[in-house]
Figure 1 (cartoon, helix red, strand yellow):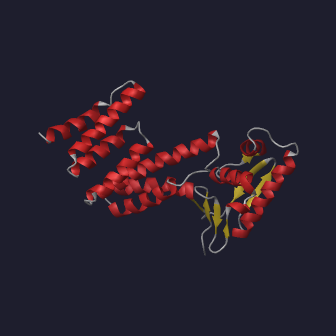
Figure 2 (cartoon, one colour):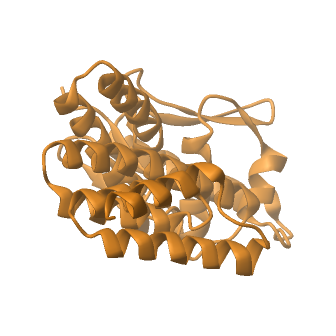
Figure 3 (cartoon, one colour):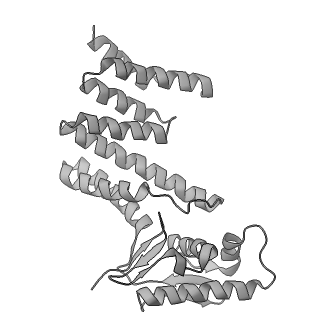
Length: 253
């Protein structure tokens, strides 16, 4: 039997074998936001007031109960189309998704995948680490509710960005160990672009360039890091980053 799959990154959708529920069937923009919130918080019941604040953060409509009921009704219909066993339950002012035990949700899968990838890498299973990291990176590269702004949305974007960086570190290490240094540089460069104030990305990128024989490029990466830190933070890179720089510098003498 097909697994119920819920995507809240990229285009919000519900998939269960052939039936596919797209964003257009989730009660519009407000339904999409409500569903993404309920799915990402499915481990706990949500109060009506909390969901109302998520869907209407500025000014709720006058007939708030009617408006909320309409959204929940459309979400129920969408879930029923994809999987009859799934539902939106409202009890004593609390709202939660009722989903099959084997449901697959992309945000949850990304979190599990990084743990599996890092565990496999520590255990010397490069193939397993690669597989889990690729799955994670594929999910984490997709935007979460693009065009929407709220503190809870930003928190999930920050979490996804952190997972993405960890996944890219794994892919860069594995491709470097396989001799695919150009690809390793590509992954390391993406880390620096995502987190320009995270020094581990610069150190990784410097080492990857050095392994390729691009000593000058490795040194330029350090210069870029130092300039950014001095201009934006009024500080120099850490001693650990400087040590990598000096190792590369001395290796060319």
